[in-house]
Image 1 (cartoon, rainbow, N blue to C red):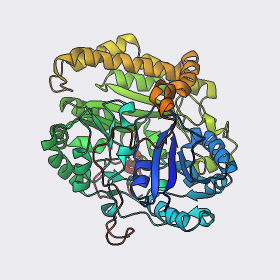
Image 2: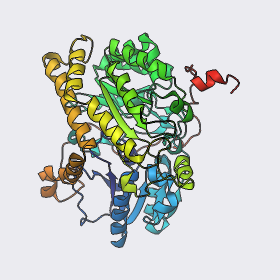
Image 3: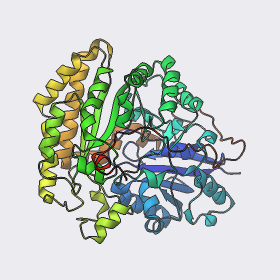
Image 4: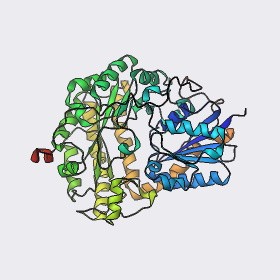
Length: 507
């Protein structure tokens, strides 16, 4: 029997860290398929080679390009499937450009879809919306099919959980995943064992690695023996315990990224953030004292934000030891409740998906400032925070902390170099002329890899040294693949009451 050829294609927003979505789908693909995974920013797509089935994943900023690619393949008679965040939120729209759309977590639907295709390609049509998988039944992601070396030696992806127990109004996680669940510790440790020798650092791509504190503690204890270096995303409450931070540091954590969102308490209350801005300063100080790089994510343009929010945020950052930050406007992703509400009120400034990249792109007409004030305020804040003087002061502060990111003799130049790199990153994100240049350079990045042109195929696995180490090969699933058992309930944990809750204790 001739093996079918399957291409799994992702269209990232920009040169982001790698994700494991397509590698997870490849892991549950039946053995009758030859599989290729293509990141269109890091690998040339060979359109003319024979392909039977194409799966495309893209978020909102690149969905127009994904639709164009899907239309091209369909005109050539190839069966096309679209999935991901945008397709989950706007499935009927995506179905106009594809034979089928996978909604939500994909493994269960993808397995069924592939089996339908093997019976007859004509059976693949419509929406596939199956139950989410029990994570304990899943095989290891097929990272051996990814060019992970092209993302850099510090961004090797790991995953230990899915979803987030929170329900912030601006976040898409609740629509994409079935609650918060964790993988077995043994599954995570096997990912760590399989990392290639060239890997210097890893990054947990989980939305909230420490949401289940007991699980996080067990995982960190297990990781101590591996000599791992990694970063993670976490809610700020995890940093209340110095013991938990020390345990994370012993496990190899060097960076904690927290979604603080705002120093405006009214914004936190209004978006369902369940956080108290007054404790943020303590959070950053505790992480720094434990030898971790504090990283904060900030959003602007909510209905409670006034023009002074940018100066207030910079004052806060100047008075803390937060060594890295990101800044963006609110992004009401199409199909979400926020998007529907803004659209009904006539406040959406654009429905051009290419503009939904965040940063200084204003998508919603603000309530208490003008669109220009919001755009210019974010640009001012980002370039001020990443100014030469402030970046040098942060690097000097970091050098004085003997527990922070010990990376050998190169420690001092590395910390200064990191700040210089961040300055460049945020200038090409916020300075219009550099934004234009960067957007042009993105499309030519894949041409750095001459070998792709010489090989003339995306099915390179047998010809190229595997980037991800040994693999299971063919998928073997014992017992039911899908199970409603094993899903972890949202963990119960104490949270600092918001100001609104203090004012209204009966809520």
